[in-house]
Length: 421
Ligand SMILES: Cc1ncc(COP(=O)(O)O)c(C=O)c1O
Image 1 (cartoon, protein in one colour):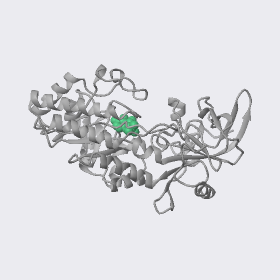
Image 2 (tube, helix red, strand yellow):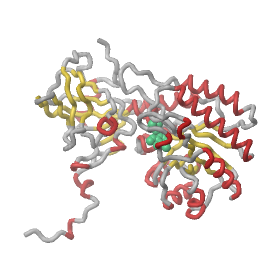
Image 3 (cartoon, helix red, strand yellow):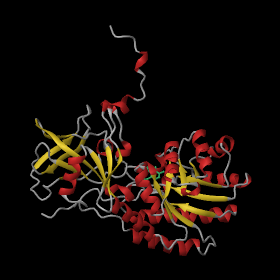
């Protein structure tokens, strides 16, 4: 049987790295990350000013962000630390888009200080921003289409999602911005997450193009850009196909010619803010088999746990697992692959056919490059692991060290404890 999900590196390479760096660790593939960024840029090359603002929350590592900056991407931030991180990497001004919700005044102030594009999540934030940080010349609104769009499992139904403005609020909001002297406008939406159907994004473009036209007709303002959000899915499961970006780009181009150009709104920039499709397939969690336990089910215990990758426990998400060096061996054992957290959803796989494994075998958990390490936590005193970058030249670089017990205790002051008896 041919391997349905081959790794971008050899078993020898991973074994060599694991001999130098203790497991578990994340391993990112620079070449793959750059190629994903280039594919998206190429698909929208027809659009003057197209820009992908990488969703920093997906992979908030400065060295990954640095690669993406070199590929011409901007940074999409949702918190003050993400703004700081992006600024440290050298993103500045409108290289940064600030898409937050339930936002604090201090966060708006930080975004304003950097000159970031501010994307408001609610109509009441117009006054809030004005009073706390001042209105910039360019303001964007996030649109929530409610029952007009379906959404999907991860993001949920738009009408049940806490994000964005309703359509009447958009019209009222842009009028208000104009009264306040705002002179540049953007329109944003994000209606899907991990969506593999490319048509979904074409429909999103149609929806925001139509809104931009109606807002122009009604209020007389021109959108400088529309942002289609992130959410392009990746094939987590063997046999799934990636989104055909070129086809999506071509279809959006056709709509642009049919809708935006005749309405006299060109040039209008199209922006996106994907995370997963850029880094997701190019990050791997490498972990080692520690135990094998056979009770009512067969369990393979590894040295990573849900604190390193919570997507399976949180969403029941599928992540493919390769047993290094045994990719082509018969997958004739059905096991749960588990971590050591005292939570029974600490499972990387449930009822998964794998080859027979032994203590010390390396397991590579695929497609962990986005919303993986970033969602890590320290419950049960578990520590976040290191992140390594396999560079295009074949060298491996540690881009984040593993946490130590000192990191875990860093926020505690033991000196005020009563003396022990
Ligand atoms: C506002 C916003 N933009 C972009 C993204 C990136 O989504 P994805 O990584 O699925 O592309 C997210 C994900 O949570 C988001 O909340």
